[in-house]
Amino acid sequence: MYKYEDEIDFKDVLTNPRRWFGLYYLLLIVGIVLGGIYFLKNINNIYMNSVNNSVFMPDSVDIDESSAFMIETASKDIFASNVDKAATIRSAVYDIEKMYSDKNWYATIADTEKAVTSFANSNVWKGNKELFTKLIISNIGHNGFNSNYTELNNVEVDELYNTFLVLL
Image (cartoon, rainbow, N blue to C red):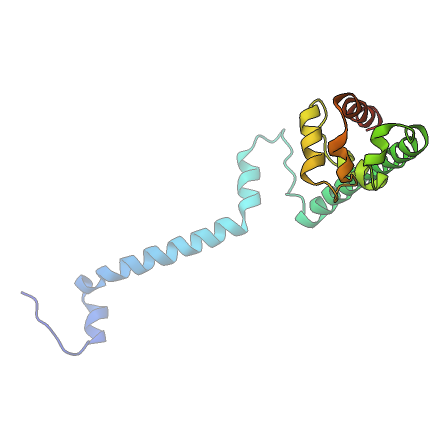
């Protein structure tokens, strides 16, 4: 049967083919690793050969170039929208202070620029007068309105809402 040895005779391991069985696992692992390294180093050539020759597949775009392009494009769009928004806010502030200063609801505005900016940065209130009112009341004192807003009647609230809707 099998005999147990307390020392390993390496000459016997190399000369006896029955003891080589464990080497197959070692060779298999080494082969998988070397095959994987070869595949990863030649992946572009492997996939180029498997595609029809009439189709051109360039190498991948450098991440730094593509991210720089996307950031540049997005920043131009954001800058343009911020310039448009800033112009809209300036125009709305000017109109409110010059054209609507005689309205009763004008006295509820403590800081016109802050009030206009708080509604210019959000579109959720458009089309919903109740939400407009809740946004003013929930943050009163910090959004450019003062506590006199709660004393406005429905007609004055409608006028304020319609004015902000038209200007923004």
